[in-house]
Length: 172
Image (cartoon, rainbow, N blue to C red; front, side, top):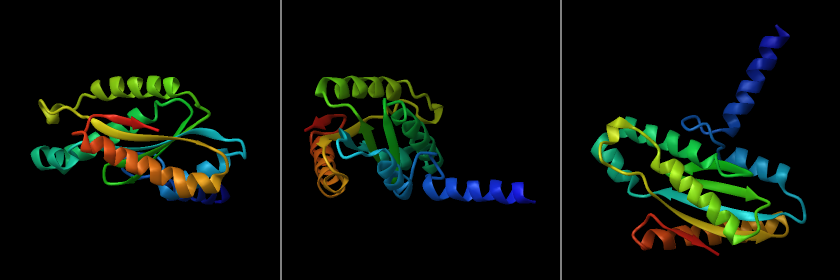
């Protein structure tokens, strides 16, 4: 009986920290993970990522296909080295990349992400290509600055990328 209760408790913890659809972290899980990983000398990149024209995918192909896109995209984001990935809602994702400090290194990770996204095969999409816009903001310092300032900057950078007609990345 105790093993069943422990397994159920572990399941409840998992569900409370993960997005049910994509399997990546949810907001609560991300917050917990950042606090676990972060140290006073932490540095890396905070990235906000949106799928371009996601509404058009849902409208053209249906919400079930949209769900397949979200799952595949979330898993593609998980391939970023030293990252914690969360779905914030809809088609918006957040990526906390720990320990990468050189812009060249984050650009390599983004290029590899583009390759993974280009390789996504969902027959129901037909000729529709999945693209994304991203804002990536470098951070260094204490967790309060990261929470208060860097997320806001990464979010603004993502919208700047979207204004460039999408399928682009803005790094600061």
